[in-house]
Image (cartoon, one colour):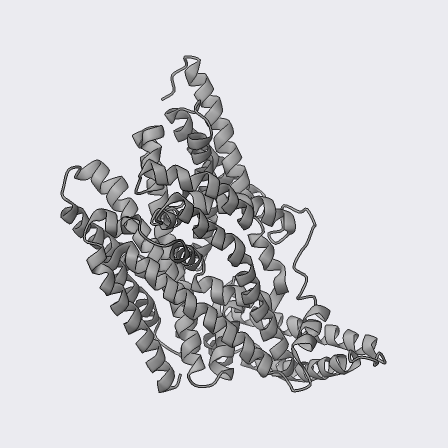
Length: 565
C-alpha cells in the first residue's frame, strides 16, 4: 500500500484505542465494566449488536459469496426479523428484569449449578475458538494481499482490540462499535460507488444489474425445500430462525449487548433495529460482490486471487500447466468481455437484434472461465496439498488494493480491520464476563470487592485476547479447525436454545432434565452432522427439539418418582 494508506490505517487504530481508553472512567465498578450501568441508548446498543455480527469474515466473505454466487446468501437471514420480534417480547424483558450479568447465571436460579456450569463452559470453549477464527480469517487475507507477515496482521487486529476492551469494558466496546459501524457502512457505500464509476461509460447501473441478472446473480430466493441445501427460503426461515433465536437469545456476546440498554423498551428497540436494517445491509454487501463480478466482466481479473498460492504454483514443476491455463484464461476473458459489450448493446431500447446470440456467448464464456479457474484451483491443491483451497475471500481485498485510488485503499482496509475488531472485542468482553461471573466469582472467590473483580476482569480480557491471537495463528495451519469450530457452534446453539426454552417456556422442567437434555441434544446433533448431508442450519432445529423432548421426558420421569443420576 501507499504510505498515505498506511497513515490512514494507523490513524484509525490510534483513534479507536484512545477513544476506547477514555471510557475507563465509566467502568470503575463491575456493573459499569460489564453492563455500562444499564445506561446506553437504544441506537448505540442496536449498532453494537449489528457490529458484533458484522465480522471481517462477513465483510470479505459475503462479498466473495456475492461475486461467486449472487444474492442467494441473503436467504440465510430471512429468519432474523421474526427472531428479533420473538426475543423482544421474551428474552429482553426476561433477562433485564432478572438482573443478571450473564444468560447462564439465570440457569442456576431456574435449574441447578451444574446446568449453569455446563452451558457457560460450552460458551467459553466455542466462543474462545471463534474469537481466533474471527481474527485469523481477515489477518490471513490481509497478510497475503498486502504482503505482510501473518503474525504482524494478527497482532495488528488483536492487540488494539484487547487494549481498549481490557480498560474500557463494555462501554468502550459499544461506543467503538458505533464508530466502526459508521466506517464500515461508509466504506461499503464508497466501494459500491467506485465499482459503478469504474464500469465503461456505456454501462450504467441499470446495465450492470441486467448483466448480473443474465448471469443468474440476482436470484435471491429459492423456494426449493431441500434440507441438504443451505441457502434456500425454507432453510433461512426455519433453520435460520432457530439459529438467530439461539444466537441473540442465548449467546452471552449478544445478550450482554441489550442488557446495557437503559430500559426494557430500549433493549427491544435495539433488537428491532437489527430486524429492520440487517437484511438490507447484508443485501448491499452482497450487491457489492455482484458489482465486483460485473466490474471484472470488463476488467480482466486474476485467474487466482490468492497471490501467495499463485507464486507457489509458478515456482513449482507444474508452472508450465499454469502458464497454458493462463493463456486460455486470457483469450476466454476477451471473448466474454466482447459478449458482455454485445449484450449491453443488444439490450438497448428498440434493439433486439442478436440478443440471444450475445447472451448465449456471455453465458458460455463465463462458464468456461469458471472451469479454467477450477483447473487452476486443482493445480493449487495438488502443489500445496490444501484439499480445501478456495480464494473467494481474496476477491474483494484484491479489487480494493489493485483498482482503488490512494486514500480509499486505506479507508477500505481500515474498514476490514474495524469489522474484525468489532466482532472480536464483543467476544473478548463476553468471554471475560462469563469467566468472572460464572466461573471465578461463583466457584473460586465469592465475596471480594468490586475492585478485585474488576482487576480479574481485565486480566481475563487480556487472556482471551492472547488466546484468540494464538488460535488465529494456529488456525491458519489447520484449516480444518475452522470447520470444526463452525460445526461445533452449530450444534451448540440449537442445544443451548433448547435449554432456555425449558427454562423460560415451562415450569415443569427440572434441573436434571435440562442437564441431560442438553447433553442428549448435542449428541443427537453430532450424530446427524456426521452421518447425514443435512445443512448445518437445520442442526439448530434438531438440537433445540431434541433437548426439549428429552428434557421434558426426563423431567416427567423424575416427577413421577424415578431419580436420575
